[in-house]
Amino acid sequence: MKTSGLPKEKLSEIWRFSARTSKEFLTRDEFYCALRMISYVQNGIEISEESLRFEIEVPLPKFDDIPVQATLSGNPH
Image (tube, one colour):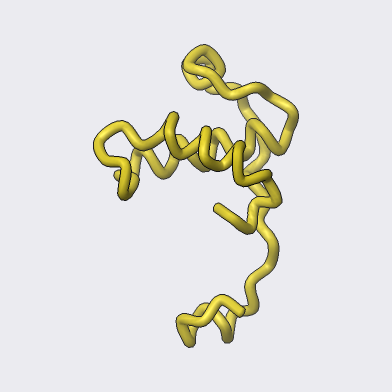
């Protein structure tokens, strides 16, 4: 989520909003919710219970490219 280009404060807000079952990890559905909220913010839509209920269509969230070799080695940089 850090490679989304969003400020840490906004990512913290998204995490708090998404992490309903645990503060340490997200379930699959919570992760999908977080991805939707990242895309909302990237597209200028304020995140809220209401915006999630409306399921506003937005493009997939964008993340900085991570080289494939780095992901295979387990080292993101």
